[in-house]
Length: 61
Image 1: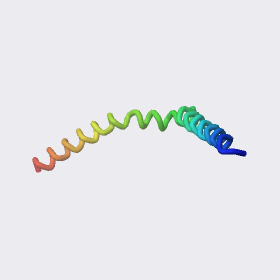
Image 2 (image 1 turned 90 degrees about the vertical axis):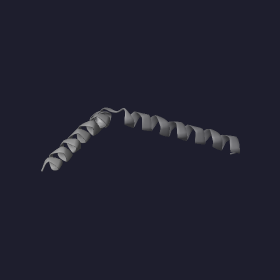
Image 3 (image 1 turned 120 degrees about the vertical axis):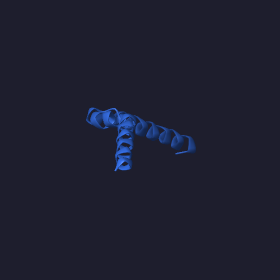
């Protein structure tokens, strides 16, 4: 077994890992987590609005 065979095996292992990660990320059981992650930027806006409202009410008191 020479160096080129080891490089070929290494390439196949890395490619299999990449395909496995892509399959895992797009699998059906990850749909809920992916949807939640997709809405995170919008959730931050809601949190910011609530924080501003709380600060306004605290200033009034």
